Length: 131
Image 1 (cartoon, one colour):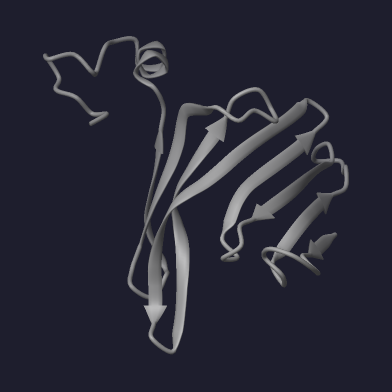
Image 2 (spheres, helix red, strand yellow):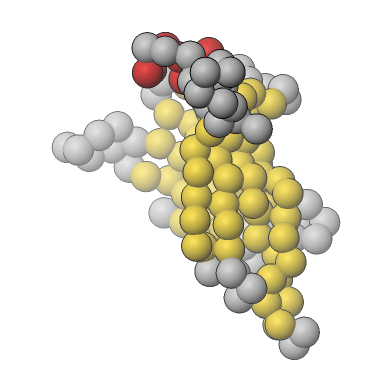
């Protein structure tokens, strides 16, 4: 089920998505928040395993003079479910001038990168990849 924002910030935008449990997985809900400009500010994923919150930011202007828009270039995971502190986990997006997605990156902190790859890719030997 998809619900749309009927009043307040983000009117007309998606406010909630509910996915029922099925044979392929458990159910979950996603709730969206918007600022006064109508830009999405947060997504809250409520699952049987807990709540995960992501914050949108670094908006870029796209579109044309007669049909302007804005798109988020950054999506950052917040700590502790309903937390308010940014974590090092971040997704970055690049768009063309019309607002079409052209590239995306998933960034994690250097410590987790070292654990995943078994080496320090942020050392002077390799040069920094997290600049």
